[in-house]
Length: 54
Image (cartoon, rainbow, N blue to C red; front, side):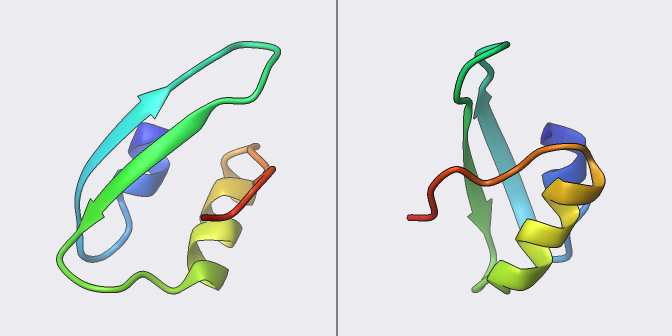
């Protein structure tokens, strides 16, 4: 998850609270707004799903 999100343009940092078999969370710091569609697509390609969006 960290490398997938960290590879997005404008991302400056990623902090992941990984809970195998349960809901995990990620906090992303970016230079500007990120397109939600791109974030969802990136996570899906890495094998993750979004349970809840902020």
